[in-house]
Image 1 (cartoon, rainbow, N blue to C red):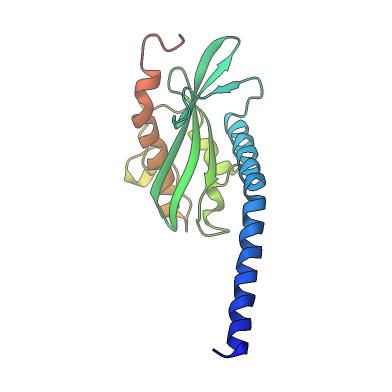
Image 2: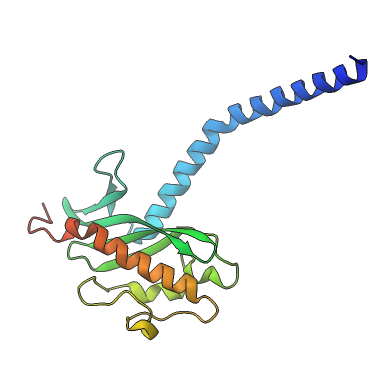
Length: 182
């Protein structure tokens, strides 16, 4: 083999070791930053600093919301793959009766400027507050439902509305029990 080729291989190996070492040394910090960010998003989703989040078990996709030693509701992880550009993930907060108290998007890849209607603080999300599965149709108004869409973001609007409705259906057993405040 030629010396130049050996030097190239050696340089590539050294670069790989350096990059691998950097990745390993920053892995724990990145993981902790992700946990901190997720907790911040959870607090933003419930929009009530007096609530305590309790995860029933480590594998649970939802949290219970507690205040004054009483369960006040749930924070549910919901998602859809029907967004215009793929998966949309959000937190859905509901009280003991299944009334929506907050919705907060924490991941999406929708078109910037158009799909921004689902960003965590977007006014469009306000239409979900105080709605329930039993009193509302989680479809676009033009499809016989109770929710507005945004022109230019109809696919995103439809996906989000249906995601919230399906999330309520999937988790209804949590807030439909007679001992819901136990």
